[in-house]
Image (cartoon, rainbow, N blue to C red; front, side, top):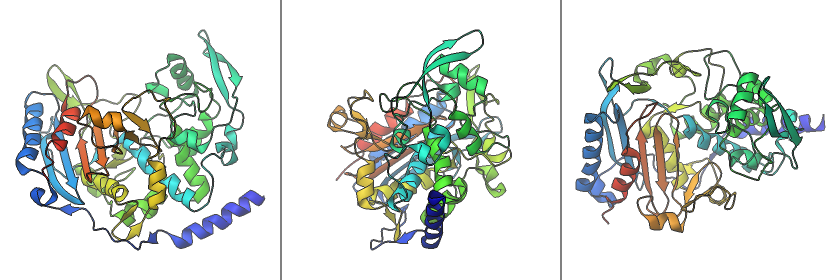
Amino acid sequence: MKYLITLLIAFCTLTSIAQTKSNQTSPVLTEGIAAEEGMSEERLARIDAMCIEAVRDGDIPGVVALVARNGKIVYHKAFGFADNVSKRNMKVDDIFRIASQTKAITATAVMMLWEEGMFRLDDPISKYIPEFENMEVLDSLIEKDTTYLATPVDKKITIRHLITHTSGIGYGVIDGDERIRKIYDKAGMTDLFTTKGTKIEDVVKKLAKLPLHHNPGEDFTYSLGLDVLGYFIEVVSGMPLDEFFRTRIFDPLGMDDTWFYLPESKYGRLVSVQEKKDEKWNKYPATFYDPDYPIKGEGSFFSGGAGLSSTAKDYATFLQMYLNGGELNGVRILSRTTVQAIMGNQIGDIWGDAGRYYGLAFAVINQKGQDKGGQGSIGTFSWGGYFNTMYFADPQEQIIGILMKQTQGPVSDDTGWQFQQLVWQAVDD
């Protein structure tokens, strides 16, 4: 009862303060002139050539590329088709399913609540979602009936474990361990999104009954941890996740094109997920998810790990807030000191990538990564999404790069690494 009263008081405080004004006032992201921001117009044009060639050769059906520096958009172009069957041309304001790029927004929401003193990052998640109290680690799977043997965990899953993918939770259909895939399938777990009337609470509580890959904190296993935190945000804030995002992040930042479920007025801007078969790009069929999710379904499932759709400019706006130390247009989303913690190495060397470490929902470039070239300066943070989207932001150079595509299945697509190299080679200051 005491904890419920504390939550009620916290909720009343939360709803009364909304988002705070800042002593700083960085301008909103606007169009700029490349030369004035230390970028070569001629060298940026190499991105044109790369995108045109990739579309012409059938490597991708279409793409939107954006580059910003010093809070100014110096490159923003669209190539190819948003839908090859209807021959709808791609436009710069088209909307893409950003899948795992949702994770950074969910982590940001978690840290906003953390700043308000609602919890500690090393609190056990079972303090807020009791179903996670008695977790187990998978020992072996009994194939004939998909039952399993498991051992109790040696420590509780914490909020930090969930943000950093070190909780031991798996990822269902896309999990790397076939045993976990079978167990999740039998349990009827939902990955990515669904058109059914499911709620994230239902999925998370079902997940809490399933075994882990390993003891919390022992390894990096890409997981549904950010979906758990999506429900955690609902519990702590007392608001549905979509409402929290809208009122606390999207509206303050002017991200009007970022949604779990698109308003009908935006349906025509949604890019089709496409696959290549017989040398032709076709709309990807429904599999374990329906690719028409953002405009179909019950509209009740808010996946904190993969559920959002957005535009290149909206996501660049979100990243610009980070480059500004947590502020944009006079609105303070996070403290500069919190951003510093988010970008710190949270899991040591267990990720196994010598050129990057893992912060709170971002991969961050270290000295070795910088020295490899083509990935940005020390501190550059990045990630991508299941449908072939990607982003990076370099705090030292004040550069943002976003590449939006929507493909599934095997492709011969080098535009990701090429785009990164072409952005850095365009610096001319």
